[in-house]
Length: 379
Ligand SMILES: Cc1ncc(COP(=O)(O)O)c(C=O)c1O
Image (tube, rainbow, N blue to C red; front, side):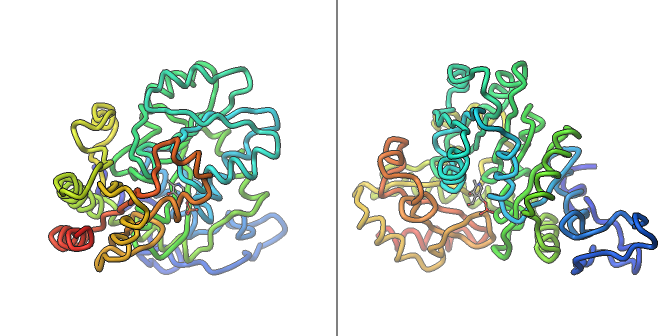
């Protein structure tokens, strides 16, 4: 079956007790047993919940994976992957990554003796320079948040595989509709399902998709032991969101393309970062590993001051000034003071994330209205 059909039907068996077409929100903490140890596959809701099981089946289908694991947030999913490691282990991560992942790595896991190398991954061959016998994990985002840099997933996986190093790709920005890291050789695809998977800005959720049964058991054990489990209502909302992922993503891509070209032609705009431009430094790789370029982009103004950026950020009427991305509504964001505020300024500037950079999550409204809104805000 084709993706659109699989997305809608994945994990959606009629409810066995009523025939309900949507898996109900099983709002329960425990399950009655016929005799000690005799249960229907569910014992306690930190370990299992039928609403979560239905979602996890759908998540696996989205990434062509065998297993899906759903978590209380994207950060909780990231945390579980990092807990596979032990003191002395080393991680290679892209230097342009979500600020919350950087915060988790540098402020939490570093103090438990895990070493991180933040490197430029636009040229995958650099990765090999940082590998040693302690390297256990390569962490990458592509496209990156917020500079839309592209890393060649297949090339990184080819370097990692012979050395038994895990590759985890944060696939939040692309969504599984545009890119499938496991098909390209990665071991784990991670999503902040808060974003495109949920799609309606009404839930915080995260997930991991993977093929290896042992790895799945280890991650499930970490989740059960540490408790970062999602509630059933949140699982229901993400599962509902997934069913329209393909139609939403088509519109995000169309609108993204129009807005990116509009910005590039605007006389007050200096630089537009969007991986669909054919002169993007890694356009060929983006084209090879993605099926479209999405609605995420960022830009700087010719007047490269914080004040000029703030003026634009507070003048839009359709774009809402808010953190997050991937919802049906368009959002505008200032990475330096919002999503990436946890990265020290020198580190930020060094990695090209200037004070005046503005990030857009282009939604699925009418593109004419979005362009008109940006036009009046940029002035
Ligand atoms: C690329 C990326 N990864 C992970 C996360 C963390 O996800 P959550 O906010 O669901 O914990 C975010 C959140 O903004 C993100 O943008």
